[in-house]
Image (cartoon, rainbow, N blue to C red; front, side, top):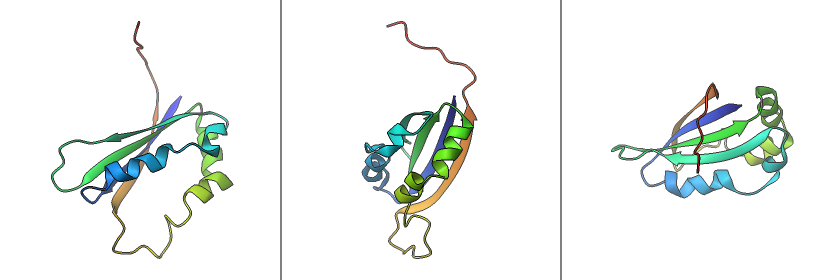
Length: 108
């Protein structure tokens, strides 16, 4: 399994408002190899907010298929445009890909 994490820095007060956008029900849930999305908010940062959007995939091929799909393009329409305004709450983002190497689960 792979975790694709997009670490997004936003202006103060925006991360918590934006987080639910990444977990809306939709066609992503039907993509081959998709497991789940979780959004975490980093606590106690004085200058900006930070959220991590963690997407869990069975394989990198499944992730790449989603990234090249019309579903992805529709979901990200406008986010990569040259029309970004000063009003955008996003300061920066960085994507990392991790392979799950070991897991321990609860006995409960």
